[in-house]
Amino acid sequence: MALNLHHLRLFRAVARDGTLTGAAHALNLSQSALSTQVRALEASLGQDLFERRGRGLVLTEAGRIALDHAEEIFRAADDLAATLRDAGSARRALRVGALATLSRNFQIAFLEPLIGREDIEVVVRSGSQADLLRGLQSMALDVVLTNLVPARDAASPYLVHDLSEQPVSLIGVPSDGRAGRSLHDLLSAEPLILPTPESALRASFDAMLERLAIVPRIAAEADDMAMLRLLARSGAGLVVIPPIVVRDELAAGTLVELERLDGISENFLAVTLQRRFPNPLVAEAISAYAAAD
Image 1: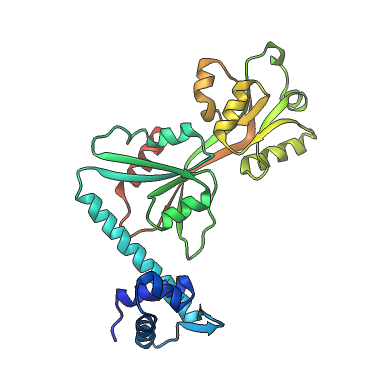
Image 2: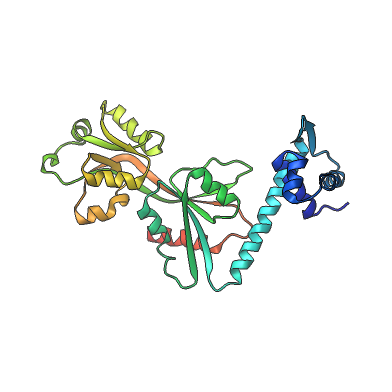
């Protein structure tokens, strides 16, 4: 019997649910009809795809291979449908996912060349890294903006585009009492506003403190660039942050850059997924940002 998408779709439903009963209910099919279709697929492939364990079904090695290929086939089909649907419309959509803690200034700089164009609709969704990457794999998003490098494997072939490597500085409200003081003195005596310990930026900064034998006075920690920005503006302490995050405050003079932290930087990334029919607006946005940076 020839392999077809209908067989694969039913097989995928059973594999995801783990039971014939649950998958049949979700598909609005009888359990016997679903079982017949799965057996037909197994006969077509010449392999058992499931083995029974208790009341559930578990994929065999052949079943796991078949599921990987089925997922790729359906991703390609969804990608093709979305591409052709967008191509036939007057306005094209770019669906962007942005890490909730990411600098808003960086996000705007990335989107700025596309915002306001009559032929483009930009949709931005924020969330956790895990949620955004799931959106990327399900084709709900075209690109994810982040400062965290995703884990890559054969099942999730992410493409990571380095957009910008931003310097990191010690920044605070203007104060005559800080003029002329050394970096060592500032880090030792002033209260500090820091990224949370799980961030790559904090790890680099902690390593710097250890090299300098400094025990910091931590006034606050935050995992959100916007919150770090607000805390700095409040005068709660000196913040360790890329200047791009507080670009407007530095220009207005409400914050000042005291010291550049040599050897520490923040990387901003665009993450895409290998697709047969990628959204051309993604490449356009990445190229425009690289040209402007």
